[in-house]
Length: 296
Image (cartoon, rainbow, N blue to C red; front, side, top):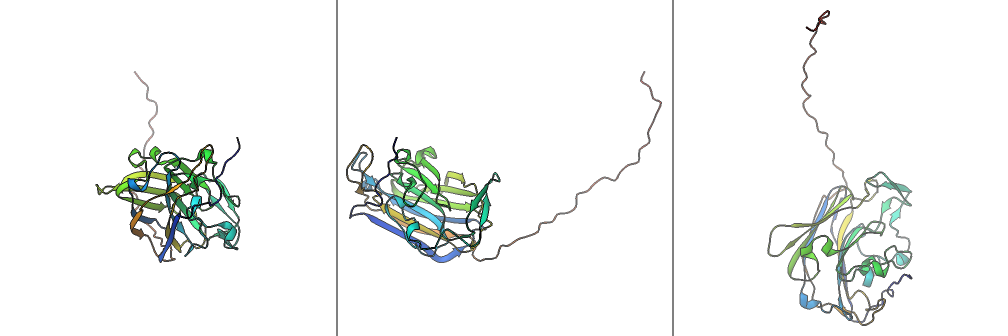
């Protein structure tokens, strides 16, 4: 079966795209970075279960870039376009190796991160997981999911591509008539990503997923200048697809507020030596060997 990919960034004139990076504070990813925001996408903003249908998606990400050198709308949801980076590659300096948690070596061509470290997408179409231009890795159209949760790693590979409903049935759609809080924690120098959510009717967070990213970026440079960003696009495509046709509709109002980030600022990696009292032990006791004893 032939692989079908949608036309590259072929959006209608009424498409809306928004992207920002919070540069007032940079964080050190040798420590956990926690960020959260509230969003609302009312059910009236989305309509149609068949073509034409409403499309919308947003991502949040960690990056070492202070501004999007180049960001693409549509199925890219704000990713940098490698063909326009003009030498600003993901890695610079000497060659290096990263290791997975299973101690498998991953060879990378350079050692300093310059670009997105991790990017998390919530996409009504699932098209963010598609493969694309300049050998961008991804899946075929037939392996995308509506109402999808997708993660791309520091090498821009798709490491997670699942329907939201497989993680939590109460959060199976991006649509929400009240503000919903999403919280992210990037932990263990890139090994784990924890994501929680909270509806407006409760003060308690519910785990959405804990995802093992499978690698550590601890041996890279420039880990003390990490920024957090956000992007949003509607629609994601022009509405084309295998066996269907029509026009993709732009979503109605989308609301975002209280974008909040916590983490350690500075380039110093703090270490501490922990000591404890020596364990107590009983002295050796002399014993005498008794011989010539028989059982009766």
